[in-house]
Every structure is written in structure tokens, then in C-alpha cells.
Figure (cartoon, rainbow, N blue to C red):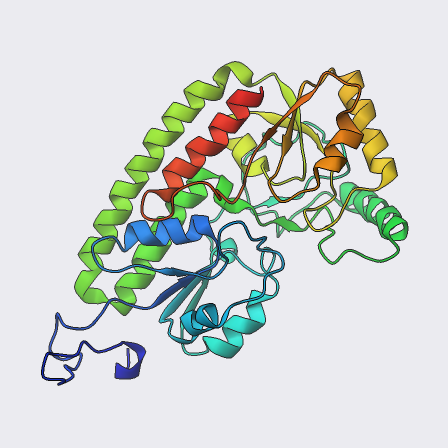
Length: 338
């Protein structure tokens, strides 16, 4: 790694120490996109340094205007960990422009990452419990054709094509909600940081190993918490939770919105209302940033109640302990509602 990729520590007399005098260089500059990725990186770097985060708490990752400080974070980065342009399409160009010399790790594309295709339509078939595999390389041709027809209807209803509308073979980017992906990403981060900062490789790998144990403990607690709820169906605002559902063997019956970037059509609202009545669904998940009026339109006159769930973990304390706490917060929302 060339000298300009690291900041130098200044001694009291103002003399800069080069990388050749080991032990004085600051930690690698690390940029992350969302809270979950930031939390995993913070845990791997614990005791060495702290990563920065671009998408701030409460903001949608799908469309975000970077502040100057966040642009500087990219400019100063030695490595960028991000989910991918499926989640933050606006960030791709920013990384290329501002972090051209950094190592860029697209987690969704990493071979160790389990990915899933978006589910089709407003109501879901029971296909959330299949074995995890790379949905980018294979898909069901008939479902693909059916979904394209369905999306065309919605594009017509909204008067334009939704850039976030997805076909059946598109990858669902919410992969951080599968704790196995979280554990895999810890290893990816430890390996990348060790390449940049070999002096602290032992710390990075030890932190990753301990963090995986912490996630396993959370998985065990959550599995016990959700086991009685496996036959209970529910509605989500948008299809963001299938990674979590598949891991813990629970299943959503459908989603109100096509994506988290567009309001549902009247036809979709009617379809979900019919599903709620037919299946006697008593639980629906809202999200902090969405219009509560849409939930009223869907559930008024039914017995269903709603609980707020947050796939970004806005209320979870950021830092090294974020990821296990985030998983538990998601699980508690499910348990409270179901």
C-alpha cells in the first residue's frame, strides 16, 4: 500500500513518521454504506479504529444526497464496504469518482453471500423456505414472465416505470437480514483489512471469530423466540424481510407496496385487503418512513393490528455491538406482532 493511502501520525514536534516506523500509522480509512455493514466493520476493527458510514440513521438507502463530510469519507477511504448498487444505485458513481484508489468490496456480489430473488406479486407463494443460493444465476422462467406482466400493469397505473420495480430474477438486496451473511461478511472484512493493514491482521481475525459467536448466540435466542410463530402468516409493508424469514422459518403472506420507493396501486391494496380477510391475518408490519394512511386503507375494518419494524435498525445503538442487537430488535418486532 503506497504511503499516501494512509494518514501519518504527527509527533509532538510536528515530525511525520513514515509507514516504515511501524506502530505509528493510523488505522485504515474505511467507508461503509448502511448501519448493518457499518456495525459489522466496527466489530472487526474494534481496538484498532472506527469505520465511517455514508447513509445516516433514518434515511432511505435507495435515494440519498451525500453531505460534504460523507464525500470526504469516500475520498479518504482505503477500503469501501457496501451492499451494492441494487440497494444504493446512486452510490456507484460516487465511489467510482471519489474513491477511485480504494479497495471496493461489493458484499452482495461476494461468493460467500447467499442471495435471493424478489418474490412475485402482492401475495407470496410458500417459497421463502428454500435453500439459500445465488438467485442471480438462475430463476424460474415462468415466474419471470408472469412478473414482467405484473410490473407492466403497475407501471401503467403509476404513469411511469418505477426504477426500483423489480422482476422475479432481480436480486433482493436486503441480504444483511440473513445472519449467515452477516457472519460471512465479517470474514470478508477481516481478510480485506488484513491485506491493507497486516500489522493488525491478528486483531481483525480474532474480532471476526468472536463476533460470529455473538451472532450465533443471537440466532439461538431468536430461534427459540420465533419457534411458536412458524405457522402464523403476516403482511409486510414491502418485501424486505425474506432473508430473515427464510433463516428462522417464518413466512410473510404478502406485501402492501411493490417496493419501498413507490406507493401501492389501488388494485394492489384491494388484493392485500382480500388476502387479510380470506386468511384472517391479524398482523402487519409498518416501517417508520412510510405513509400510515396506506396502512389505514388496507386494514380499516379488519381485526389486523400493526407493529413498526425497521430493516435499517434506526433505533439500535451504532457501533461494534450493532448487528446482534439489530437482529434481536427485528425478532422482537415479529414476536410482538405475531
